[in-house]
Length: 303
Image (cartoon, rainbow, N blue to C red; front, side, top):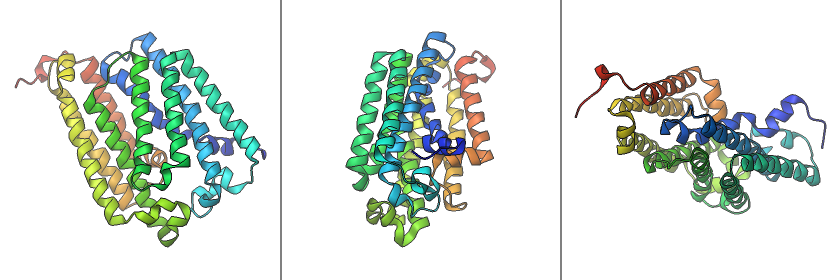
């Protein structure tokens, strides 16, 4: 493999995409046991393990799509698009990252390793089959987020809410379909040359799907905030006020997609937009306050 600079290495590993693995922490966070050292350590190990495994998966994806990515203005700047890499070198790097990630997952718990294996299998199916099938391509990507929730739940030893799982799945669909829309809007007639499945999408179709996914994600999150497990844990309806942050976040993301012409890389969108980052910070602060410091009677609402 050609000599790698630190910048190349960060790009190759897609470090910014590691933010997706934060979903592993969600079950522990919402269970009210975030400060349990044993559970937190298990979730942290699962997070690190999935970061390395996902980097291996990203390198596989970039290697398989290196010729097509040259058409894309941003993806053409990736290391594997700019430089020729032997398949043997790429294979060793992929296997090394996946093996390291699997070992770290095993340190957390053997069931986390099993979950990681399912994650790898899903992405292999995506890369070699599902990525060419309309709608199913994004569903497979969204399934990866769902698996992260399961991994976090197993690491934390909790049962995740059905509403929370559906909210995350729909949010992942929302991000996936906005990415497809951005690719069509950016590449126009050359879009199918970059990703063959784009020949089956139109911006109108994607706009309808995005509206449905974003609406349902807000609704399911709202239902989660007033679900019985949250009510039992918190003892009041205060969690419902966090819906406002979710609504703003989705609306802000749509603004960035339609007005600022972003959306190709959710990780870059999140880290490059200050209002979005502030909103996430405020949302996290609010739910931690409600879940962990909820004994304030003056704010308690009675039905």
